[in-house]
Image (cartoon, rainbow, N blue to C red):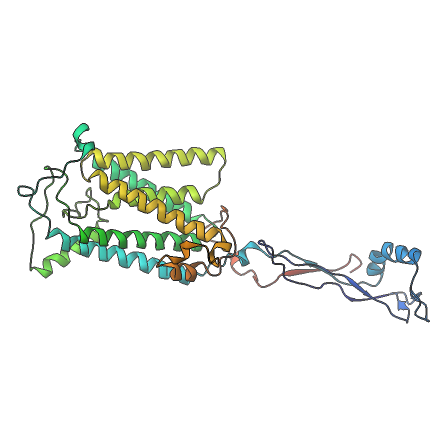
Length: 374
């Protein structure tokens, strides 16, 4: 008996991927020789007659013994790693980051432009708002909102660093963030609302002073667009609320890319509380109309759910009955998610790999195990 080949690898089409193993035995007419030089009788007669059932049974029982005696090698197949179904492609993440940064800067430019169009509150008083009718304004409330937002962003950044598939998650976050700021830029430019409260003090209008406008853009970007840093002194960016966008988006990502155990659910509850209280305190501070907050939450949550529905259901991408494919950014989505073959699991790893893991050969897909006699 001679072993012609021990492993026949064939890619599996299952979602997790894998390989099938097939062991074949080549019948030979000449006897095999053991390391001691004694021949083994062939299981097939010289006339080529078929081996009977008893001989087949003995052949199966003695297969492993024959391998040990002949000091053969065994190739052990390893299922395809999930990493091959979820390639990092950091260059795509870099493109998504540039997209988010570009829209963030463009939004600050638009805020500077819209600020010049905001009507004076003595001429156009604040619009009626039912929330403001029942809840008085507290001056310190907006600072609580911004502190909650910074805490959520910090928590999400730390969680993202420890995600195993942080490249895929990162480009999803940056793409959605860029899209939300793009939509916000459009809405604030189309309709300029008056200030929501008489307490608001807007910076003087510069009109034709281009240099002064550039300084305001740089100041707004450097301060993160936060009032507590003293960088946001302009008005007009009301529809819709950028603070609500970040509070909602960070919580949705924190919840989506973390386990569902009891301890993590407590963590989700804390993050939800920070997010919800941050949104409520925006209204308590009378810094945005209720409409601004509602529209911001609706657009952020719907965009997040649409994107992840398409990303987690590959059958929808090529379906002619999937109307989500008609979204104008569908081509960009296909570019970012083309090689993502399965749902991103909630698995974690160290942000900085040790040297042994860095220099480990990633191309080795099987192991060669020698028999015990070697």
